[in-house]
Length: 532
Image 1: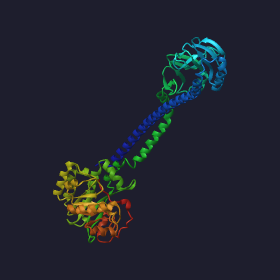
Image 2 (image 1 turned 90 degrees about the vertical axis):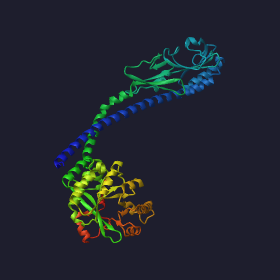
Image 3 (image 1 turned 120 degrees about the vertical axis):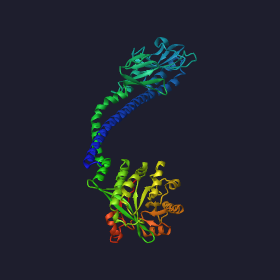
Image 4 (image 1 turned 135 degrees about the horizontal axis):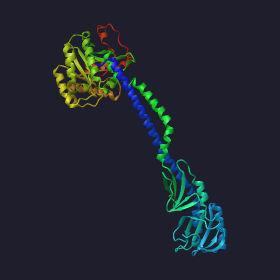
């Protein structure tokens, strides 16, 4: 067995390594999460920016489209009859620079210049067109060379007549497509294969800065798209990580410190348990079992308590699960066996007196429990009857049932502890051949109530009788419970009504009647331990 100093050294070393590893993992995870979050926020910002720009342009184009449909009946009507209406529409739309009517390929009326006679293809080579058209172009009059958005609506089947609207796109794009560095360094209006950047229109290919990416979003109502260009969201997120480093370092150091504190009372128990065994800090208690008909003591259940000098009393509910996780439940059971044998003279020296010791299913593997019993229990030839209590939740693997058979041959009785709370089946009972079923205290507490557990209690009692298995009821605290169980044939009872768990050294005094009856509400935090 390791010395206490060696145990403490390994314990502190493992705590330190754990803290460092968790701190580094926290740093990596924090920076990783910040990167993923920042990248997601960047993508969302680009989408939101583009959708807002598209919505703004659509809002401008919507009344223009409505007006165009109302003007499409005008081509062919003399200019002096339509000029006023064209000017009125242009003034009302505000964003429209001019409206022109085309008849047989000739622009004959303009909202600005009035009556004209110019072939339309001289002003705009793409016109006339059989199909409605939206395109970027440059102004041929007024502000010559300035970018415009040209809208064409044909009014004849051959496309030679129609309405042309010119939108002041330079001003409109300047208001709606403002860059937002560092994520969006440039916003571009794309119509067909043309790209408007500032006052310049590029055909066929968008000029893109080195290392920049484009994010293209199309309007669902009109044939245009908004392109946001700039560094990729991943690159911007990566560039922002150094600013997140101080906070991530603080968080990782905090996690490391919290882990150091937490491991002192949780993860470190594996070493604390070894230290407790080496320093004999564990104390063996017992709780009597009495006959229901006369309250005569017929045995005890051995329990374990841990008075840790560094942390005080530690509940079995804490150190037993941790001992199971760390593979230390078997050493604890050996400790209980050794201490029970050493103090066996305090119990009645009779084979009719049972000593129950809780054993985990893992202790059965490869016959380890048999070796331990031969070395610790049978080597000292105790006169009392040994009973091993196996919890129902710890079902044995098939390979360990041979150990059960050998235990029966050695004269060791078997009990299923906390019966009714696990998931065993009748096949499990048949293969284990238990001598005793211990009814869990939750079912005992339900006696006299309408709870489902009360019905389960009756079923367990009937099952025990049918299979001819002795029954022990745990957690008996009232005369009503005692009377009910006695009338229903439960022969052995255990609970605070008779005695609370006590050090083995106090058992002779209790047996002699020198100890006062237990207080039902006392010592609740020291409830019975099951080694599982």
